[in-house]
Image (cartoon, rainbow, N blue to C red):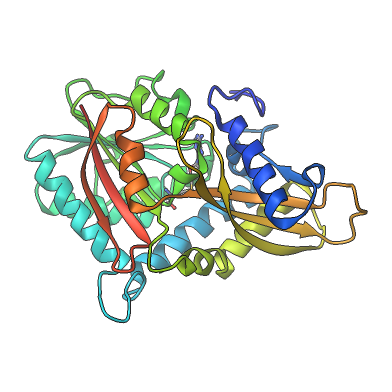
Length: 338
Ligand SMILES: C[S@@+](CC[C@H](N)C(=O)[O-])C[C@H]1O[C@@H](n2cnc3c(N)ncnc32)[C@H](O)[C@@H]1O
């Protein structure tokens, strides 16, 4: 198996990393040549041995799982001093919306970026309502989640219905993973959509979903009541660890300092600037002029209105429901392909 080398991906993402570098440079004062930004997907597989699970990829997958476990298990995440609607409740509400839209029809469930805790939560809720889940397909470039997903889903679905595709999302439509005649529910959770240029996401969805299919996504939002949840999230030990692993995969053993930026990106394809949260490692002891800032993650952060508008921008999707935590900082959005 081989994947396109950096910069050859058929998406505008290559442009996105230039915008990230420019914005971080402008707002940190660090010159652009001193900032390294890699393709998002490079964090998740080893180009020299793409099919092999190694310890770092395993760690990356387990960190994401832990983040979700902690998030769903926290009765207060997303509440304010005055209102209660935590993450787990927002998820419960969107699953009820999904049930209402899907009706009694059988479903195929396709997860872009498999993660066990939210997926078992959703599958369990759908099963409890009697939904006939004909096939689950986990899709990920990182092979590390395959075994865990098969094990965690074993009590919810018969083995023959659990599938895994180790592939780029953009190659999925060219595989024969579809069950003809069955409505496809595609999920992209864990703010993963924010790692891609909105135009690339729209193109991907146009490619994967057929009329009537459903798309469930989760994003961290910029709430009018304050942006501190964004910084709180990226300051957690789990996100710091994720950043450190990403750095050490390409620069083993270097000493570094963790940084978080929230910067506006001017993307020419879109009318207005979009904000991006960027985590980076400032490598200690690098001479001036050499690349000393290593960007470990970038994730677009929309307002609730932007999130809705971006989905409907292509004219191919209608947003059926958007459920947000009480503080407005995390939303689940359900959309249907027209
Ligand atoms: C931000 S994580 C989100 C994981 C999970 N859905 C969650 O809720 O936390 C993104 C996941 O998608 C995978 N991924 C990211 N970009 C990809 C791409 N272009 N093709 C295939 N897999 C990709 C990564 O390996 C990772 O497992």
